[in-house]
Structure formats: structure tokens, C-alpha cells
Length: 113
Length: 115
Image (cartoon, rainbow over all chains, first blue to last red; front, top):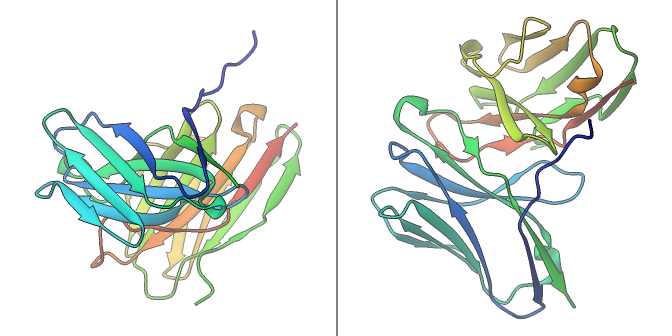
């Protein structure tokens, strides 16, 4: 039969808009949450991380929010630029899996000039 | 720093052939990870090493897959015999164990096609 691939969520924004990418995680024992960016033909690149004892962390043009109650993680990108177009992955580690990262399925962000 | 270096970048082989993928981690990094990326399964961890010692190989699909890290600056992932379902992009990543547990540095990947 025909194989079925992952249907990645997509987000399409205009240059200059703010973007919000969401992620749900499953492991209550995870204590580090991370966002990665993957451009076409390249390996994933670390953006920002957050520990479970925090609910918000800011970087350069990016903010990560963590809601442990509903196991939800989001990445906000301010003033999105065409160079931000990529696939964004959330990842988690911790508990008995400390040291290895489990990645989510990814979200495709497309920024239109 | 040159970053994580993987070779080959692309490999096309026939079913049944042996495939060896190579990785040179960032100098000074003492954790090394092999991931596989496919459209069906996304990014999957195959195996990781700390200080050249395999810590968790639970993600290795089957006995056809093996990984070694003979020293701190080199690792191989071998598939023997290869099958079409092994077609994927294989990534190597390294990390400084004393650094952020989530900050992995990935190579550009080795795209494997098994015919």
C-alpha cells in the first residue's frame, strides 16, 4: 500500500508579523524543553530552551512559554523575517530519559515578503 | 570551529550492500548522538554515547544497525545489509555534557537512498 507521511502543521505569516508555534508534550517527567529550527537541507539548529521550573524565557526576537498544567510549549517569534522560514521542532528531555532528546513532529513556518 | 562533520553527504546504494556513515563531533564535546529523519517517523534517536561509551541504543532498529565510537573524535554508524526502508537522512549531533542538556549541535546529515 501507499505509505503515509507525517502531515506537519503549517503556519504562514507576512514579514514583520509575530509568529506563534505551538507544541504539546507528553512526558510529565521532562524537565528541559527546547526549540530547534531546521532549514531545508540542513541539520536542526538550537534556538532556545527552558527549564521546567520556569514559565517564560526570552531570547533575541524569540520567547518560549511553558504551561506545565496542560503540557504545552510555545515559541513566539517577533517581527518574523523571510529567513525565519523553516521547520520548527520542540523537544524534551528529563526524568529517566535525561540526556537524550525526544523531538516533536515539527511545524512548517513560511514567511511571505 | 568547523562544527559537526558528517560524511558522506549523499549515498545511493543497492539493497544488501553495507553502508558506513561517519561523524566527527565538535572538539571537546563528550556526548554524541545519531538520529534518523524520515517523513514517516520524524526525528528518531538511534543511539547516544557519553565519553565514547554507548549509553542508550534502544532506538537502533535491529541487528543490521551498529554504531561505534573508537575515540572522542570519530564515530561510525553501519548498516549491513541495507534495505530500502533504511532510506532516510541520518544526523550526527554532539554536545558538551556539562552544558545545557538540550543544546545539541547537529551536522548537515547524510542522505541515504537504498534502491
